[in-house]
Length: 284
Image (tube, rainbow, N blue to C red; front, side):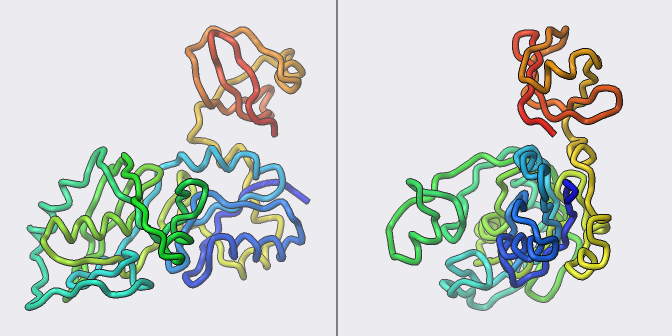
């Protein structure tokens, strides 16, 4: 079995874990994982790793992401999306004009604080938040800093706005929908969500399950091709064995936590530089 990544187009209606299990059955392999969980109702790009590629999932988790979100105004739910129970409705609802939406969105560009939804997989004292909610445990979700690079309204409906979002890791679009509604003094919730991009994984190139079945191993992307967001470092070939054995190589370079290491055109893994010494972190 080859090792590599699949740029999967996850359909709505299944969890990311279910998607991984589906790929596992297609390839009849056990070592499969995914980068960047998508909510069951969401669709779009889900990078799936097979074999040795699973070791490098953590480096994709830090990649920037892009989404297309349809936000429904005039109604709010306890989960921030249409899977939840309605907790508020606007009386005498009127859709905000485009100029008001544009002005409100400007407040969310840059580094902002966000409160993740309680219906999420974030762990609170070792337990997933959504499990605590289902057991009626009272708790507070910790706020977090996230970075949003850009927001653009691309379509307006009678009670919806479709927004494209470029953001950093850890951003919850459900929270953004709720916060945008509060900024406009309206209840709001996420109606639909499509992930357009994770790092270099783009929706235009993503494969359905039928595609994966059809193309098999030929649809696997090389591990190093999926780590192009990491700075490259070319190691002298005579230091390959040292790198693979975890031994340091003295280098004249600034400290770095994650580098894509190659030697003689061959990908070796991910390394780090600390105090002028290059060491391996993950081996291919």
